[in-house]
Image (cartoon, rainbow over all chains, first blue to last red; front, side):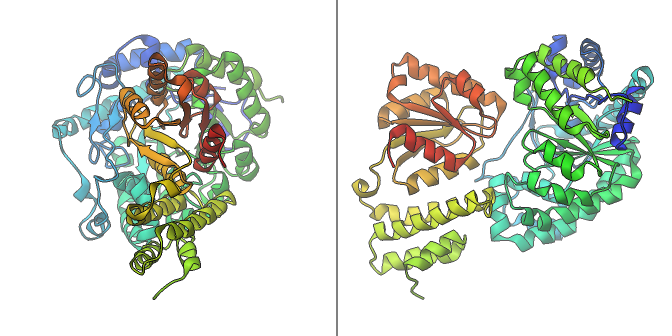
Length: 374
Length: 212
């Protein structure tokens, strides 16, 4: 099977030849190839070389995250981490060339959006929170160039390795975006202090955000998109709160977007365990579920095994602080509990300072233990 | 409306911000001793803790409770005798350098104050030297280092090392807290304990100090 066939089978809840493995490599290839983060993020040739070197050294993986973080910063569409809202500190610019990019997180006392912002959104629209500080207008002018190069890279990669991309564009939900704009503490307090405003703003925002997503998909030809969510999980709120402030919007967005793409990665960080039952209401198979170690993936298999493919959930810190032996054991444990009948892809977000031998162990262990017997 | 004690307890436990603060003001105005008001608030926080333990409440509810408690404390603290409610131990706490996350830390601060500890909260993005100065100045028995970014491991480690260099490491217990911390972190940092949960953190600090 090619990586694409393998991944597609797993996502269609059929057994491929073996469990696919797809680490989210982020900035890790820059470390492997010994290039600066500034070059890795903003020079496409450097990025491609470093990524391919890492891909081959790891012994090939089944999905690739070939949309670099540079693109996330330039994010041409006002989704979650877009330069449209947030001020980024970038390597080679505001930071030394080898430091990780960082978003300017506003303090609780000085949020990007104050408590009157809900009314501003309702009455005037989201653009009220676009900020074009720091010469970012010039960066925005480079967006088409980035988009084009990114599309070329995907085509080349599919042809050469038949490995599909993890994400070519992002979708933002209203509640996660509000959480980012208000800051988590303020948003959690708003859930108690002004719940009706949140609902009103979300009702207003959801169609606009769907339109932004569809516009992005049409303009870039994206087939694999990512919907990140993690602000209304059991790490923060009750299942009932998620049901009221999160689920309706998540459903509306994903059920609309699904007809325009091949797959949606539901990149659901933090603890979703008590919320898993609700996820049966998301589109089956079209959506696959990225979980981090905060969610019980064995419970997810039990509840969602016949509904959507699971993607995860090795603990990132294990890749930095652990040993290849420990990594192998963890991979085997996830495969033993979740691989049955297909619907599993082994993954983890690889930290910038992960040890190469640990990431390699994750790939090797999946290939060793993930084989399906006919 | 002149609520009785149990009303204040339940107003806090039910996260009724306006009502709880109104009652604190009224009771202070009517001359009720601050320590009695604090005692009602404590019962409310205990109920919040029970509801959190039984998964009826979640983090957003703890944040709200801590927020109400903090505002209530601002009202009653000036009228509290230091000796009567602050005798349990002295704690210096903060989010380490390079990290601005403070939700968990703020809840821990509220819980510690609620339990009768003297707490010096240094805020966020606190450099190791500032922790050192505060530990010296306040003669702290416990140092709480908070962080949520994986890179917070380095400043935590530096802070413990600077305590060692100054010969203070044996005099202060170090506890680290935050979503990513685990046994490995604790070992790398050289801390005495770690926690990912505010209530557990409170329990551990009490154990470390041998108080109830």
